[in-house]
Structure formats: structure tokens, C-alpha cells
Amino acid sequence: MSQDIMKKVAGLLLLMSVLFIPEIKAQIEMPEPEASEDQIYISVEEAIQIALVNNYMIRRGLLDIEIADTQIREAWGSVYPQINASGNYTRNIRTPNPFAGSDAGGLFETFGALEWLQFNEIARTDGDPDTSPIPLDEFLERQQQGFQDAGITPPGFDDTNPFAVENQFDFGVSVTQAIYNGAAFAAIRGARQFRKISEDQIEAERQEVVNTVKRSFYNALLAEEQVNVLRASVDRLAKTVEETKRSVEAGILSKFDRVSAEVELVNLETNLIEAENQALLATKNLALQLGIPTRTSIALRGELVLNDSDSVPTVYDADRAYEIAVQQRPDIAQTEGMIDLLGVERSITRSSYFPTVNAFANAAYIGQVPSDRVSVSPIEGESFTFRADERGFFDDSYWNSAVAVGVRMNWRIFSGFQTSMQMQRNHIETKQANLDLEFQKNAIYLEIEEAVRGVETALKRIRSQERNLEQAELNYEFAVTRLREGAGTPLQERQASSLLDQSKLNYLAAVHDYKVALSRYEKAIGSPVLSENN
Image 1 (spheres, rainbow, N blue to C red):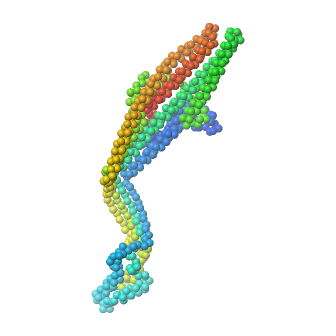
Image 2: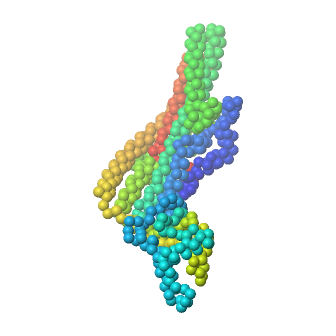
Image 3: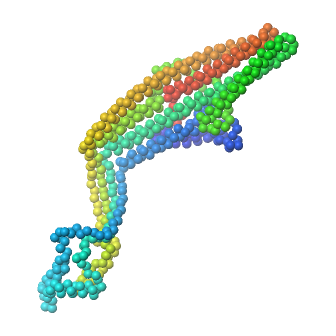
């Protein structure tokens, strides 16, 4: 399966693949409540596919992979350019005079005197005999009169802070690009590793689901086969009872033989009822494993026989199987992934020893706009005639731009030994994880050895029961022949029939145990699920 995106949509693709298989489509479309007793037919392969679609843990695991994908993109975001925009507006209700309490504060009180000195200097030097210097009080009086004639409130500095600006605006854009950040790049590796761990978890869930479904399917199939055997036995015994009745009426057999046969028939019918109940419960349990409503009636397709599809190997080697398991088992891959994740954590911690370096660029547009934007200026050639001009809100005199670029370094020189202690703790945790991995591999070897022995034992039982079943069939045929010829008794025929039934049940149980053991063996070595899509 693709490592990038296919796992994320595996559930959807698998569901589509199941829905478009004609044999299954009609079965997994659940009937309406009023049609709850409709029967569906299902094979073990179809049961596995349905379970892989419906299983809660698998569907949840696919969402974990989607979360891991977002974490990877999020980690990459820390090394992409960071762009921020900001805006600020301040209304200054009252602004302190920055020169209050200093000699510079009196500077603004002399502005009127400076204008008077400038006027007198011009009057003395302009060569016009009609102009002459005037006293300060006359200058201030004539200036005040000029303001009043123009309808202008004269500017003053006695009660006003000349630096006060009521409205302040600040709009800016900043761009920061990481040049070196060891923790960020290690975090990207960690996010990728987490995704791999999530994929291994899904594969482990799939293998567990397959093993559980196979076991439930074969349990239900064995229960149905046992019902078939008992039903056939009841039919044979019922015929024997009828023949015994006729023999008793003919005086060939005693009533004791008839009563014995009837009692045996009742006991066998009781066993059949119990077996039918167990078979029904087994199919209900299978429906539960598949996520199908348990009220749905399920009919199983298949039989408990040893066929070519079982791929029976001639020799099971635990050591070879262990080598395969180490390569395939997703739980081992998960543990190894956790160790790698601890290595990523160590890299993130180690990055604290090094500085982070970022390049930045800032651009701002700053406005300082007073509420009173009236500008007072004298009319050219007239010292005491004034005019007032209203400036616009966005006048260039109120707005300015600023641009800055640079490189910023941040280096934590000493952290109170926190970083070194974190490194030491990580080292200990890595040792613990390696010990867990060692124990896990030993446990897996034991699991494989038990699975191998289980398969070999079940296979030997099958071979033995095959021979025993052949003998039981010959023995029953011989007993029936002797009974027909008058050389045998009904009791001997019933005993031969009972031995035949028991031999069939033993053979079916052996095949069931082999199939379950083989499924357990495949899980023990980590056989991939849906390998064509991996």
C-alpha cells in the first residue's frame, strides 16, 4: 500500500471493493427491521473483507493516520516563512509633556518672543522707512488681532502640549524565516515516525481481526457440521427403530431391543437440539464480529475439509518462522518505531545546546493624526494677516512608512542543567525500550513455537482421524450387511453407527483445530493482510 496517501483512504477503498463484489453486495446491505430474518450466505474470505471494513479499531486507526498527516504538515509549517500582519489604533485622551520638569519646557513659552525678534530684525533691515521695530506687547496685540480678524483660534503653548497627537495608527507586516532550528527539523522526523507507527498499528489490528474472524467462522462451521452429523445419525437411528419394531412384531427380537433403541433415539434427539442451539449461538457471535446485526440469519459457505487452498507445508521450522516474524510482525515494527521516536526526542533535546537563527523583515505604515488639523500661516507680505488651511486625514505630513530587515539569533547558554538531565532521562528510556523489545522478541519466539506445535499436532490428528474414519465407515457397512443377513444384531449396528458418528466428529474437530492453528500461525509470523494493496 502507498506510504503517502493510500492508507488514509484504505477503509473507503476496501468498502468500495466489497460493495462491488456481487456475491457480497446484497449481503452487507442490511435489511430493514421488518426483513430481519432474511438469510445471507457468506464464506470465510467474504467474512474477513466485511470485518476489515466494519471493524471499529481499524476505522479509528485510519483516522489516526490522517491525524499523523496533519502533524507532518504542521511540523513543516515551523520551517516555512511565518507572515504576520498587525494593526493598532490608540486614542490619546491626555498625553504627558515629555519636557515637563526640565528647562526645555520653557522653550515653547519663548516662541512668541522669537517671532517678535524676527519681525523687528526684518523691519530694521528691509530699507523701508515706513517700517520700524515695535515693542513686544504691541507685536503680541497686533498678532492677536490678526487671528481674531481671520476667525482663527491662535495657537498657544502655555496650556497645550505641542507633542500631543490624539490619534495614532500603526499597521505592519512582518516576515520571519528560520535559517537554523534543530528542534523544528527533528519534529518533522518525529511526525513521520508517528505516522509509521500508526500504520503498523493498523496492520496489527487487521491481523488480529482476520485471526478472530477465522476462529469465529470455523467455530460456527464446526457447530453446523456437528448438527449435520447428529441429524444424519438421528435419521439412521430412526430407521433402525422402525426396523426393530417390525422385528419385534415378527417375534425375531425382544421388546427390550425396541425400548433400548427408542431410548437411544430420544437421547440422540436431545443432543441434536443442543447442537442446533450451539450452532445458532456460534453464527450470532460471528455476526457480532462482522458488525452485522445479530438478528440477521447467516448461512455459512464452506466445509471443514483439508484442501489445496490450505497450503499445508510439509515441515514447520520455528527458527525460520521466527526470522520471518521479526521482518513482518507490525508490533515489533511499532516497538522499533518507538525507539526511533525516542531518538528524535533526543535530537530535539540536544538542539537546545545550539542557537536558533531567523531572518526577518518588517514593514510598517505609521500615522499620527491630530484631531485639529488646521494649519495657520501668514499671508505673504502681511505680518499680521493670517489664513487657515484644513489638512486631510491622510495628509503625507501625518503618515510615514518604515522598513527593516535583519537576522535574529537566540541562544540559551545555561538552563540550570535541565537539558543534560533530559538527555540522561532519554538515554534511560531508550534502554528500557530496548529491553522491552528483547522481551517481546522472546515472547514472539515462544508464541511461534506454540503455534508450530499446534499446527503439527492438528495435522497429525487429521491424518490419524482420516484412517480412523475409513475404518469406522467399513465397520458400519459390515454391521449393516450382517444385520441384513441375520448374522448381526441391531445393537451391533447402533454401536457401529455411533462409532462412525464419533469418528466424523473427531475428524471435523481435527480439521477445525488445524485451520484455527494455521490462522494463529499466520498471525504469529505477521502474515500481511491484503498484501496486494500494501
